Image (tube, helix red, strand yellow):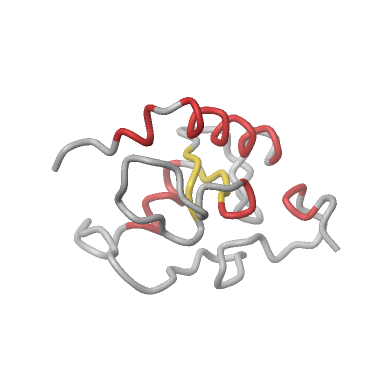
Length: 109
């Protein structure tokens, strides 16, 4: 499959940086806080298109370490998930951190 060109765009690069800055360059999974292999993850999966969509906003992204990114996106055996909302320990079904003290919740009411 060809690489999605959106992930090379200035829009994605700015969104990724803003997400990492919001999350203080740490994995948002409560109790983790790792800075290793950080990934900017879409909480609700975006369509496989080469241009920005309504899902490409900071409210739909989170910072995950490589380990938690794989936990969210891969099933046993390494196959990628294609449907459903995977749950990470310490996160709500929408992928947001459960701990209300987490920086992700700053500014939210």
